[in-house]
Image (cartoon, rainbow, N blue to C red):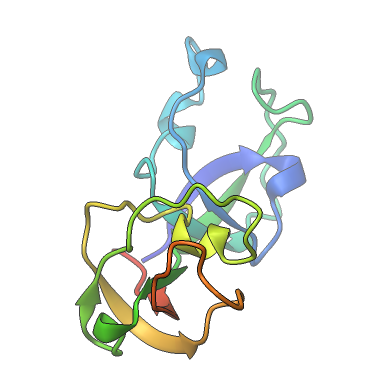
Length: 148
């Protein structure tokens, strides 16, 4: 399901994914709040279309203004414990990881998924990008289904 929202013009590219972080301090008193703050905080989205005839609007947060785009919920790539990594099953993240230098860190602590939630696995992508897990976890790279 697509939603029309406003995002910074520098970010308005078809295919761009982002996690909606909610209201910024600069949003207070803005006349476009209703069009901008209409997404679910913490959810990952993908830009599917840019409204071509829409004007660029001034914004206190985005230096080049904002434009109207269509977005839809996006899937989240993540590492999960291998024993629960089956397409169609539910899984949750293994837990926090302090090893930010690891090539898998972005999948172990992905934007758009929380540690305390179970998500449906849309597909199994395979082995994670790391050679060995510093926390000795047996992980598989999956794609969590987009939340509606």
